Length: 271
View (cartoon, rainbow, N blue to C red):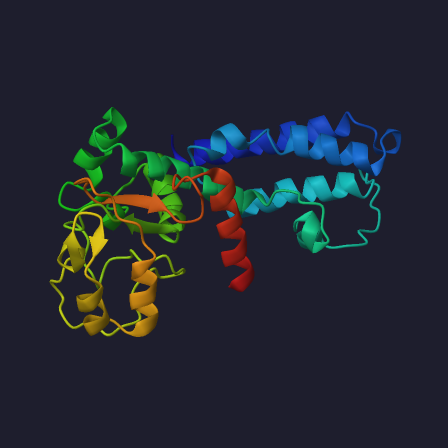
């Protein structure tokens, strides 16, 4: 799919959204009814395409403008006053808004799901195809867009940026995790030790006394107290499992679009 084709695609989505909104007469619905229509129908319309492509920021803003116009009762060329900015309405209800979806952040969260699947299933067909073309000499997390990337790969790389903000190593036997340079401590946002590195080659496995048990004496010698205490809270399995990646912001350690979206929103607010 070329860039021109992609622009035409999202322009057609915008036209479909406006056509659907235009068919609903605002005065016939209460504010609650409008909220249900916007969340249940309009927000869902671009979702399929957002799962595979990065939507231009300008298009996302256009989608939100159309929703804002409908919310405040604008019909065709009749403009009505917007008593509150859409960005304020879009925040969660617990924060005083109505929880309307921000399309750009949701788009990135959807693409991060694709990146998570590639990371967790390196032997899948799509993972092998992308690896052969884009990251033959590096791991997926270290991969770049490269020369002449496809629109799909560009979107995955953008989603990967969000995914990496919530990834940390889940310790098994500790052999694949660097004790100072890899993100493995349950302390966001970096998940890295605050202790100054004393050995670039130290593996977490060297901090394990026996399967299922930390070598607390050694850990207290190497790490500052906050790090040592945090390490002691990390559970170890008595079985010889390899280390794996986990998503910190979900209790079941798997990435979810909702948790990714919340992280993207918080990152956007802080920036």
